Image (cartoon, rainbow over all chains, first blue to last red; front, side, top):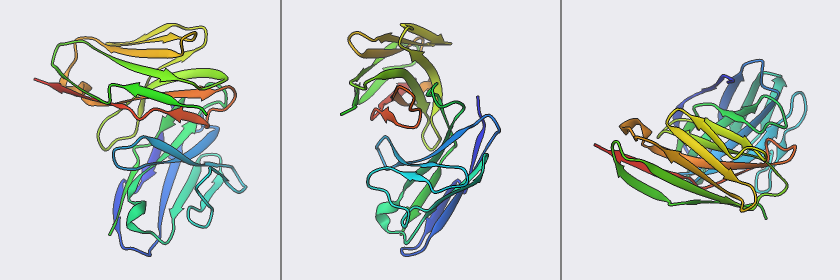
Length: 115
Length: 113
């Protein structure tokens, strides 16, 4: 299995500020994704992090709110910008070893609380 | 629209008992189905992954079944332990699209002593 590390594991932030979450994966991972999991709900895909280029965002998520970088194969960041209490969620970094097997490996998640 | 429905939404059982969780899906074209276990405050961990040609797969006390004709899957947990208390999520992927997986809402299992 692939190893995926995220930080911070949790944070409490003030409304209007921004937070950047970092994700480090081991070299087996070829595809990286960012998910959001709101309280009591399942996971929703935010975007696919593309190495060296702009991320591919899902419907309802925009780059201005969730800028994502992936400067190399094994590292990505997700920024939650201009936060509001509605952004309080768990943000999960995920990786797939190959595109077609479908097996996703997840980090431990970053629990964000916005006051 | 691709959908994954899980039942029951929540389940409480006594330690040592068996239980079965259900997953129905309408994802097409089908590539694979995965069951994940998510402990509170942790990321999901893969339990099993099954492709179209597989109809059962085991991982210790966890056994998953897949009926691709009826588009149903089940996760059977044998001799439950307190540590099995978690959310179990069924995830289905369409062909050639690992990232575009459809997630079920999960079944929350509580195992009581």
